[in-house]
Image (cartoon, rainbow, N blue to C red; front, side, top):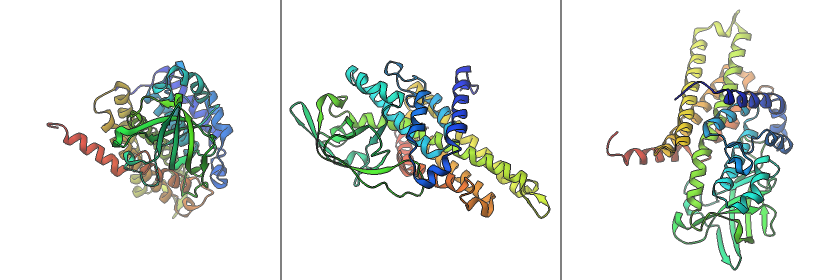
Length: 382
């Protein structure tokens, strides 16, 4: 791996850093407190290309690599974790359309998605199908030139505020091979949205259930062939896991920076906190573990970019390790702030609340271990 950023990478990292500092960080606490989904700011991010980072240039995207995306998301999440996390989900949907869509689909949806003019929600999880995603029951029955969609989805980010849904539905009773992907306009008749869930974190983006009651979808909105949906979903999640790991990196870096400042400013027993060796050691461990997580994410992104045969397992390793480590770093930074860290006047408690879900979504960290173990045990030797 080359650890030096290219001039282009340095430029878009700086652009993302500036956007986070100017458009995200000053408002993140208010968005969290008021449960506000900052659509206008997300569309501004789209004007910079951040809604189509690794979507194809033919679709209006930037056509960047997954490593580039990781660098950008890491910077954006230092401004607002929840908003950046939604932007990563939108990018995954946009990539699916640009990669697996046909020319007509890319022409109709691609440009508006990459520009952030239309926003997308990813619809895989169901009330009875979380980690066991292949057990999903939402059905799509062919009826002439349409499919008729029935069922429900759960924990859908952005639901009720987005224009496009990328939906995985069952077209045959053959397990994972019976799942098909669809591009669904979000306001079609028969689509219903549940209440905005009250969550521990990620309060700056809505999370709702979605129901489909005899929703007619033109067959031309099928994404890929029948039976390819689960493959599309899993390919999307390889990158999605890196995206959420990158959000964890940025949030943990913001927490580490806050702890660093606090140890140099706060005094107890007539000395700065940073003068106490025990606290120095804790800061050193936080920085060391965060660097290890960052390098693992960058390594996994490089594997995915190269199409390496072990890319899926490496992405799972990086997601598991980085989200666990970064939650620990945020929690430790809160502890170093003492009682102040528990107050909403400081961002530490929000950091902890926001990154906790990263250990659950895009595949729980237990499922990440399962993916890694299956890969290892499939090898004749290590």
